[in-house]
Image 1 (cartoon, rainbow, N blue to C red):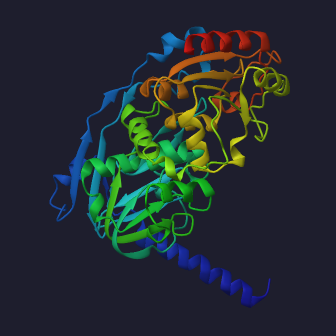
Image 2: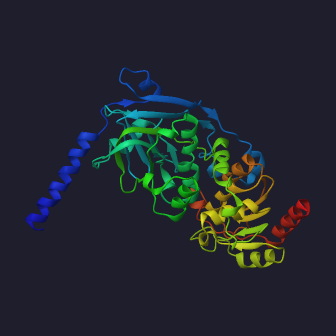
Length: 408
């Protein structure tokens, strides 16, 4: 390595090390309420939007023994308090994956609005306490981008960077908390985990938020704003989506006039959502299923070929939706109450995630578990989520026929 290149590398590393020293947490407030009661609060404000709560476990009655047993550790019913805070010269940093660190103007890291995933010894992840945030152990930090004006953060851990489901329930759901605070009219910019994918851009367009008001966290993972507004993570470790989230998202994305609809899509009361374009959780006998369902009046759609606006239109007008478990069922948020949903599962991965959507939005939910493809014992959600499925076609047709006769 030449001396010039070596010196350049050293200078770069030292620069990042200086940033680590300069921007590491000065001290810790484990609870946001402790900070708001302290002498340091100054002109900062906080609102407790929701007390801690216990999530519903009604899904256990619905799924019974079909529910995958290894999911039990994920399905905790204790929910946390939900806060929103407005910080003068506030700062926020993300590792673009599992950690969000929120600082006041003094450099103190704040609990309840900071976030981190902490891996469990037995597998899976929990929402960690603020002192478990990896900001304390990361070797380097970038210099924060200074932003003039008020920024509202929609940063989240996990799949919010690229996953359709997490974009809605973990990112856009924070807009419900902003609305409850009544601070939305003060916001100049929205900080998001990513803004490169078409559904991310289109969702903001449908919400009336122009791209020039968006700050992409992938490009600017560390910012300091004249005023920073941050909310707690909207969900708990249970994978339970609170009802206020589903109701807010349904309202926000289904109130469009018919004159903006895509006439090329047409009306399709019976939908089958294909995972033929997905890398995992494929339906191995999907061609047979589609052939039988087409004779019953169903139309098959691979949603990756359609815009968000088109997907909203399809689900809003659907009467019966049949779909294997996957992020495409996030579009149940756009269904009309009374629509019927039949979710298909691998026998190795049965969960309640989209049942919660259906239950909150008054959809009629049913499910079918696939035929075992092998005898391997699946021990975690991260194994189960990879499993393909084979569906008993005759049993499926019988379920659908019964639903259609009731609907008619």
